[in-house]
Length: 152
Image (cartoon, rainbow, N blue to C red):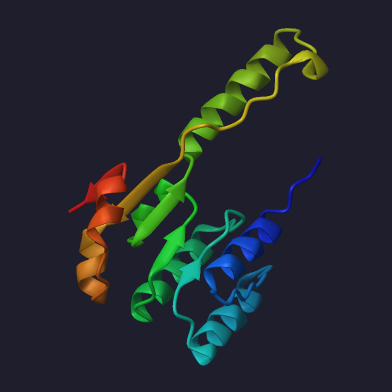
């Protein structure tokens, strides 16, 4: 059974009374158009999905969020190297290690169909207060208390 995360997100935001606008960008020119649309529409916040592929795109999105002073949540802690406000998600390093273990088992003769399905159980909330100060975004104390890591 496939669960569409966008559907869950739409349902959740509707329950909160928040209007959700989604965009897809496939390449640099489409990303520029999406960022321009966000600026023109006066977005109040930004939630970045986990399918951004290039470092250049990551840097552009992070720079946009800071310059627009948008509270923004990014999918992986590794985004913090681009000075983002907040991330919530699994560690890409952990995902890579899990993948390498699977590949190792397969190369040693394990049948892929017989390997157990693993689901990521640990998601980290990381907040960078330096970015919050730079952009003038106030981070609620209760959110800071829930964070796995606070960068000061």
